Image 1 (tube, rainbow, N blue to C red):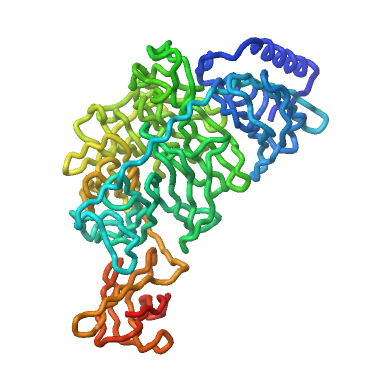
Image 2 (cartoon, rainbow, N blue to C red; image 1 turned 90 degrees about the vertical axis):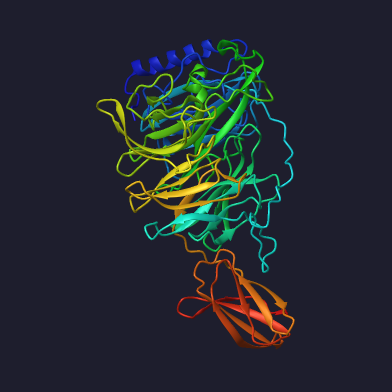
Length: 607
């Protein structure tokens, strides 16, 4: 950190504060775009990165003031004042990582007002003042759209189980598989079609492993395995998806016993968006996305003067304190005119979604890679300043795009361990490319060029108008979720399809992955029984989420307390039907592991 070492530097700091204060005298601007785009989050002469960004016009009324990049002990004398609400009391709270504070105001700011932040950085005897301003946006809350009826589907499209009749996920049809496919289960979150919606794990035979149905009107996306506090966990987004196509909800973290560990909300008064959530296990932080509609004058790009725009945001959240360490907004860095969407016909009820961030990926050196669907562009950001350093694709690409590298409405840009970048290129809607594909590209920073390394297309020439992802596998192959198309595919390193499966028509899964996973639910197995005409009982056994079950054992007897083993059977999928040799008043099942050890037992029920 650069600190004051002379009276001259102090004088410079004082003049800068006075200049900024004079620049913000007068009514709040009606515009939502600052006069100068792509400014640095670093305050001049310091190592302090702040958010909201100085001179921005899109801050939340409930924003924290994030001060990142110096030890908490060096931040002092912070004062915050609104041009309408006046001085704000609050608390200066430290990040658990030890590299800064958030000022959390005791009450909200007024939409449209300008907020002035002052403080000082100190190191020993030296003190450096700082000040910056931002303007609070006018939120544009969208009306709630009531959900329609859940599609019923045919008997072949929806799974049903005797032992857990409350679980009715969509059926999975495996259309292609081979011994070359990677180990692990498939992770998806189906919605909008036959069967219940919710996060789901299934195996390569299409058999259900775990399912957690969500209520009607709630959806789930982005189910995957991540590391949290040194252990593997399931994470997914859950909430409401308005017709405008983004999420208003929260991130769920669940352990291998299927107990909820925690939920993560968006900071600064926002709800988390469905598009991305990454836990950084190295410092217990998380990156999540937010899409935030605000009022905005769009006349400069041909839209309504009394209009609205959907601002795309990512936040870095301290998972211990839930403080917002940093916040980046598209309106501060990317022009409205860069969009391939049109503001004509937009309104406060249907905001201009000019950017639509759908992935944010932290790179090894601290930089970030963003994908924006509606500008057809990948953005490389400086991890400290937040400034866009390079653009791949779109109207103002700074990278020379090689043959086959241009994307349209793309999703899920990810930097791979070898430095290559994977992207799901939707190609529409409206149609730009004849079909959707996964691509692997190489970006040469020295020459400023991008070249196509590989591409993966479905044999059925799928056109996914939205959603989708590309996951690199340890085998060297790739797993693709086809988003709006109900398909899942694995390609080996030679580009051959080694696994392919689908859900019923109408079902979608925002993303899909293949992971290895060991689930050990804390509750016991489920059981149902039905008596045959001649007396013997058929027992149905299942254990939602259990991955270690190799076989089942049936116990039967005249009472719940007098049971003996009467039958056994290898596990036959999510639910196993086991015939017993004779009638019995009570039955129970035990789940056995590969070594024959009892993993769990159901309740004893009347047959």
